[in-house]
Length: 137
Image (cartoon, rainbow, N blue to C red; front, side, top):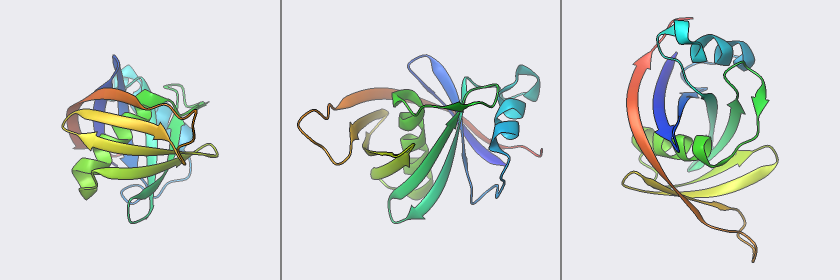
């Protein structure tokens, strides 16, 4: 399984892409790879599925494998991972029935609910790329 590990707002997230790991037990993999004993460890696990062009599905998990709400840190980490892998500066993330428009500028990711309405607030998150690797599990 190919992965990226990134940090946003003090929390590290392992980001994987379904193209590199066509798996269906993401809960188990999240718990296994977020654990300290894995050698990677993380505060969260994010799974990206490329829909085409710059659109992606995003699933988020807690370190114990339970599903998590998509909030700014994992979404920002996913956006920077997309930028590094696909070259998209702007992307659309679909998660839990919601969509987020993202824009990467250096290490800052701007996130906004999509479509943007009057109450849609822009949030900027600084993301640090930690490492990229591959695990066999």
